[in-house]
Structure formats: structure tokens, C-alpha cells
Image 1 (cartoon, rainbow, N blue to C red):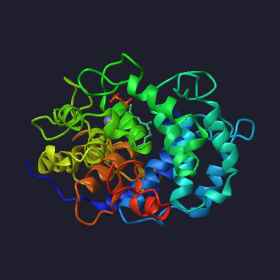
Image 2 (cartoon, rainbow, N blue to C red):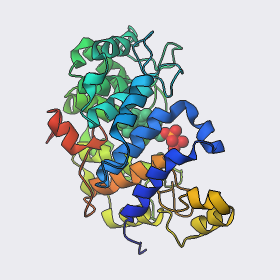
Image 3 (cartoon, helix red, strand yellow):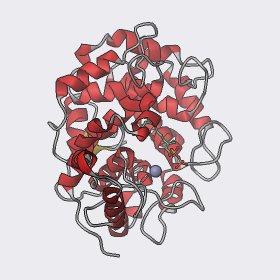
Image 4 (cartoon, rainbow, N blue to C red):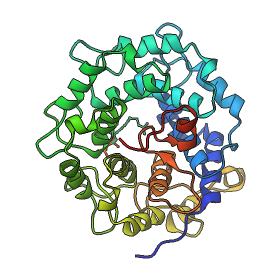
Length: 342
Ligand code: FPP
Ligand code: ZN
């Protein structure tokens, strides 16, 4: 299937317009996770070659205001509870803007390490949910802060390895079914700790990941599920780390992502413009952004992972992305953390 080219300007405008949508119902639904949204938007903007779109000082100040001085972690919005998911986003945003000196990083390190349990796993916050996602968040955060050794690394690796399944994939906890999002997290955790070859059979897991490509070119996250643009990131980043990116058919996948763009003349954009009038129409950015699949409503999460997936596929004009941190490669190179081999 053919596809339109990447509409860089529409996606930059789409992300820039999100800030104006604070009165929308959807904004309030995601209010507790604003910091994640800023990380997704900012990273997409850097990859699209438009790093100055947001006001740097305003973003940094917002991140600083989300810091919870009681725990030392970051919340998803001002006045909310700290969580590892938001703490990683905060550190990624500050690292991207070269502004890690704006927070007390020792306290952040203490917070992250305080969430490690005796068996090596990390809980996401003080309420105790355990998930291999949190192992990745903790190790990525500590690595970005140059303090990986502050936690018990062998125990952290041991927990991740216990999440590995007979099919070569990884789940959220030991015994849970393989899921490409968790594969990204577990491969990432093992790459961060230089233990890929000790614990992963690259061909076995590469096979499971390559099996995620469907006849429409897109990738799914588990057998029998629909293709979804975000898996272009979760699967491709892991395949890149495993040096098996060529096991995917690149052109059908790029076309799947490009066809999920919301463009000016498509049905989604026409319908959303028809629902608006007057000032609302003037304020709205009724196109731009990438959806989970062609024809669906775009959002900033799938916009990042579509753009980042295309970047891994070397789509012309995009900035290179670091497959391990999902950050601009230039940033991880500046921090001395970019790897040639995993
Ligand atoms: C799918 O979720 C994705 C995951 C389980 C991985 C999430 C990874 C993190 C939070 C780590 C930080 C990520 C980055 C990029 C730095 P889903 O709930 O959408 O799954 P579903 O498709 O099965 O609903
Ligand atoms: Zn998705």
C-alpha cells in the first residue's frame, strides 16, 4: 500500500497546540500524567528537528514544580503523588534540555533506590505495584543520573530475567504473558546493565518480535492483537538493540505508520473540524499527529512512537533516536551514554 510522506509541519503544530487544550475533557482525563505527555511531545519535537517549539524555561519550571520534596520523586502534575513513571519522564526532559542541575539529583536517586524490593524488583510508588516497566524506569533514571550502582544491580537483573518466558519474550512479572511493551522494558534493563548476551538468545527473541508484523505492515504487541503504531517503537527498539532490525519488512511498516497520520483532508480531520465553530475552530489544530492505526484519532503518545519508529527505520530528515532511552541520540551522546553495540 502507498502512503503520504511524513508531514513534519502538521505534527509540530499538533504538539505545539496541545498546550492550548487545557479546557478540554480529554486533557482532564490525562491530568495526572501531564509530565509523561510533555516528555512524549518534547522528544517528538526534537526528532522532528523542531527543538525550540516549546518555551524551554517554562517546561523546566513545570518539571521542577512537579518535584515532591517529601519523597524526592516527581509527580505527573503539580501537587500530585510521585511515581517512577513520572520521575523517569522528568529526568528525560531535564536531560534533553541539559538542565539536570535544576534539581537535587541525590534526592531523586534516593527516591528511586527506596522503591527497590529485597527480591530485586521495583515498585512504581509507595503503594507497591511491581512491574518490569518499573525496573526499566528505575535503571534508566539512575543511568541518566550517572548513579546506576546506587541500587542493587544484580538483584534488579535477576528479577527481569525471572520475567522471561518460554517463547523468548518477557512479561510484567514472573509468569505473565509476553508483551512487546514489557520486552522493550526488559531488553532495555538488560542492555543498561550490559547483560544482554548473558540472558537473551537474540535469535529466539528476535523471532518472537519479527512475528509481530502483520500483513498490513504494522506490528502488534502480542499474538492475535491488532497492529498499533506504538509497537513500531516497542518492537523496533528491541530489535535494534538485539541487532535484528532487518528481520522486519521496513517499507510496509513505514507505510502503516505514515497512513496513521491525521492529515488535513482525511476523514478524521474533516469530522473534527465539522464539530467545531467560531473561536474553537480558530484555536483548534484539527489535523496533524499520528494515531494508533489509520483512521483513528491522533494523540501525542502515538505521534512520538510513530516518529521514533520512523527514525529507527532511517526515514529521511528525522533526527536519530537512541533505542535504549527513547531520547534524541545527540542527547545521550552528550551524556556519554549512547552505545554502538549492546
Ligand atoms: C504498552 O502499554 C507499553 C508498555 C507496557 C511499555 C511501557 C514502558 C514504559 C512505561 C517505560 C518508559 C518508556 C519509554 C519510552 C522511556 P499498553 O498499556 O498501551 O498496552 P496494550 O497495547 O496491551 O494496551
Ligand atoms: Zn498503542
